[in-house]
Image (cartoon, rainbow, N blue to C red):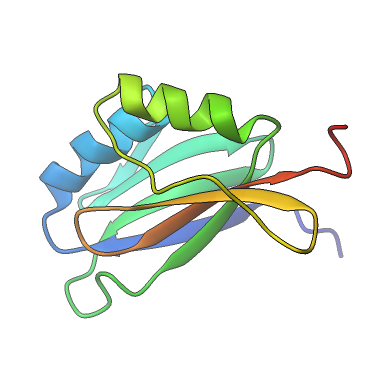
Length: 117
């Protein structure tokens, strides 16, 4: 058995507002809208972020996205009107910065310094 896809689900209450916010975060509209209250952004081959209208679970998701340039990611977010938290170095050799969506879900961007030095 082979795994073909992995989807991270970000539950929200105000779906339309969140769709606009995630469109700014990813720099484009959703790639797919498979059903009412669900939008998907394909972020890598075989991996997508799903935005789901789910008031009961809204604000409870945590997602980590690996990037090759955390400072660049923070700059792009700022250009799109989104404020990420400060970039921090971790003892494990990562540089990270987090951003919280309007529902309270936390997305942490992480650069593995061991791969990029």
